[in-house]
Amino acid sequence: MTARPIAVVGASAAGLAAAEALRRGGWRGPLTLIGDEPHLPYDRPPLSKQLLHGAWEPDRLLLRTEEQLAPLGLDLRLGTRATGLDVATRTLTLDGGERLGCAGVIIATGVGARTLPGADRIAGVHTLRTLDEALALRGRLAHGGTPGRRLVIVGNGVLGCEAAAVARELGHDVTLVGIEPTPMAAAVGTEVGELLAEEHRARGVRLLTGAVDGFETAPADPDGSDPQITAVRLASGGPPGSGAAGGSSRLPADLVLLAIGSRPAVEWLADPALDTTDGLRCDEYCAAAPGIYAAGDVARWDHPVHGRPLRFEHRMNATEQGMAAARNLLAELTTTADATGVAEDAPAPERRPFAPVPYFWSDQYDLKLQAYGLTAGADRVEATVLDRAERRVLALYGRDGHAVGVLAAGLPPRRIRALRAVIATPLPWEEARERIGAATAGD
Image (cartoon, rainbow, N blue to C red; front, side, top):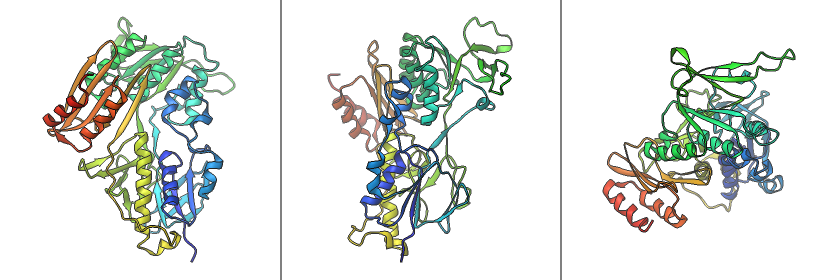
């Protein structure tokens, strides 16, 4: 009996990790890896840092070369988009109309960049989520771009702050605009955000609070090219002394980066058996339905330690969840008729809840932030500034009386690693404070 394939939809970090884990776990049947971009799997965190800066070339972002992928025996479908999934029969529909009946499916389609109405028809307005998008912006900033260009970044979250740091280092005039008055406040809290704001201001970034009301452009050329951005209009806030009437202001711009968040790539999942509210809803095993699993940025699953559904857009989580989804899918298949693709000598796995300690980092200038656990959505934050001039800070994040996250900047690596154990399981707030103090004594 010929095994049906397992299909992994999404060829980035989570999808690649899942495909490799399936082979390591004993899947010898057909294995299809589907990616809507034409590129081999690549790493995304450097897009807004080393690649945008020009320090790295695209080849350095590759997670695997063609030679390294060859032993996996993949049916690799790059430049291919999945357009539908019938959950009951586990049948994928691909662009072009092909239908692919599967033994199992792992969905790792990630997220896409949010944008603003009409922005895609304006030259000089960019988003930064894919390699091609990053290269397009880099082309205007690092290679062939003229230092001193006016860049307005809309969105002062992690991506916007990282891009602002790179653009300033390249000598451009940068304005960072957010609807929140403090950069990265939603991710790290106000006190740490204020410290970041000080660093950006010291580096010459202009920080503004406001919402975009529209764009101004130069008239389009007769050749049919898109009109060129000339300014961003803000509905509120804006530069002091702008003199704009009606509470609005105008920011002259040669380039605009929209860094206003992301949307889970679930629009192709219309089967009513799936809950696609804020990502693909999964149980604690990363299963969205029998034989259907999800991993990475797109997955919103029941975290067994924190007791609620969570979705992370963190690089490390993508790899860990890809492996977990693969292991649990194989465990499920070994109990069904689709076990024909599993090697006979493969160990029989058991499904295990996926319970990671979340981790993320952000590099801005020579400042590196590292965080474990949950820092967003905290109802209590206690930040200790260890050295304001050096931007050394330690912050503890709490929820419902327990410590759930910790963030550090400027601490020795071994001290930062020690913080992970403190919040791996939520501890009562005071107990966590004492343990954090002991772990960082002398800093």
